[in-house]
Image 1 (cartoon, rainbow, N blue to C red):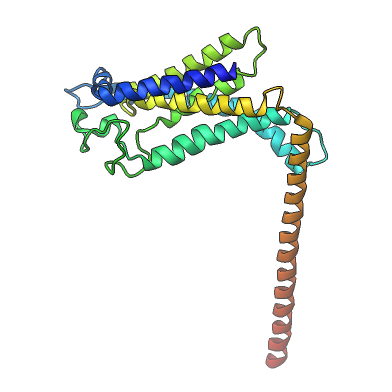
Image 2: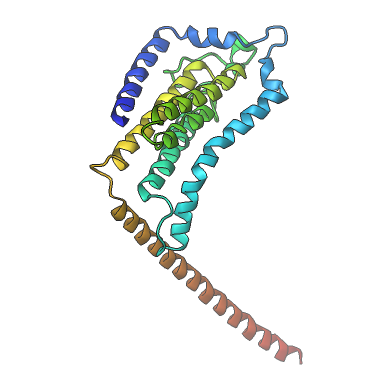
Length: 272
């Protein structure tokens, strides 16, 4: 399953990359469907109902991630306790979220690719020049268009969907892809992302998810006992490190208190 999705993501990425490089106007044509020339904006972006839908949708990935985060935090606080969720599943969910939507989409690409958003380009009453997906620029300095961070976050729900029982897994993963596409579609309608931003967000995130699935959950490689032991050792080391830091802080505070007490005694003698 993971291998098929991973290969499909790579193949789709190559096809989409070539298609949007040869015909970059597709981005402008799709965005133009939702632009109002008379108002010089993307009107749906200013409707309360759609913004409420967007806010609710953005919480769903975090709610799905919360059990794994809690299980890891509990293990860190109580290293000797058994993890409530399989450690390989916990690392798979947290790792895929951090690497995909977190590092690659939001930190590396959005902050450094420099692609202006649709509502910022000349074609849609903005000040910047349109840039195809493959050409980094300095038209945008931060929180830019390529790729869509919210779409990447939404497509990540493929990760928990891949953990569904085999009988319903295809339906769950299909629903996850539809959810990611719907959230990405809202960003296109809002004029905040081009369609290529959304497609690449999905491809990159799903590829990361499937890559980690093969690495951590493949029956041949999976070893929950060894992974939990490694987490336990790391937690114990963290406890020990925090203890040493607190001990040093306590020693420093004790010395400072002693110095202040001696200074106080000296000043008291001088004034009496």
